[in-house]
Each structure stands twice: as structure tokens, then as C-alpha cells.
Length: 152
Image 1: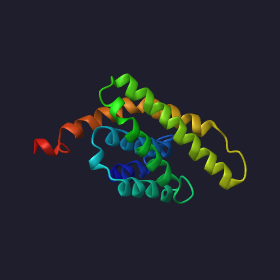
Image 2: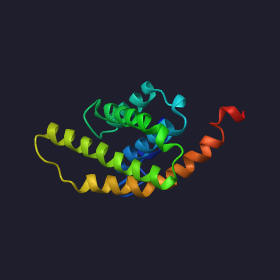
Image 3: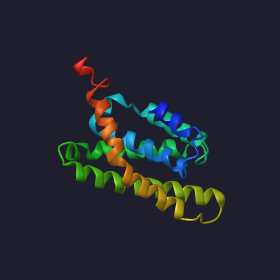
Image 4: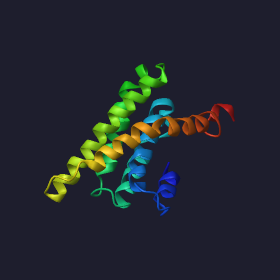
């Protein structure tokens, strides 16, 4: 997860590339908290959030708290979501991504002392909704491949 954040942080010149970092982090926290919660302890989630903050997205600690909140809610919903169809898992992720992105936007607005534009918020939400199936497919391969300790 941390390696992916560094890769996404490299300057590739992709428009909106900065918005990929929180989407990637939210998708990883959601997926691993849902399907393999033991492999993603809370300190690692907090570390990833702090890394996002250091990459310049928000005041220090904001993303750590938001990702921990996302992990906590995902763990609460885990029993209902694990056996569910992918469409429901995707819809729930999209809803959670909207809430987390809105909270990040609200905190950033409060720290700036003014209402920030909502366009980046909407872009991040659309990215989260649109990219989750592709990210989930990659994470499923990792879940069934090298990350599957029971198959080793």
C-alpha cells in the first residue's frame, strides 16, 4: 500500500494525478479491511494517512484520522459485505469515499478559513467510484496470490 502511494506520487504528468493518492489509499483500506483485516493493522493505516498528509494533501494527521475512520466503519460492516455481491460492495465503497472526501474537504476549508471549490471534491468522488472496480481486480489478484499466506 505504501509502495503504491510512492509510485502514484511520482511526477508522471497525468492530469488529476494528485487525486489518485487518496482514492488509492481509501480503496486499499476498504478492500483489505473487508477481506483480510489482519493484514492491515491500524498503525499501518495511520502511517499511510500521515504519508498522504506529507505528500501535501491536507494538514498533518487529517488523512490518518480519516483512513482510520474508514477502516473502523468497514470493519463494522464487514459481516454484511463479505458475502454480498460486488455491486453492493462497490456502492458502499463509493458512499464511504464520498463521506471521507467531504470530511477532508471540510477540514481543508476550515484550515484555509474559506470555502474551497467543490470541483476537486467531485472529481475525487468520481475517480473513487470509477476506479474501484479496477483497483479491486488488482487487489483480488494480490489477495489470491502472494498475499494469500494460507496458500504458501
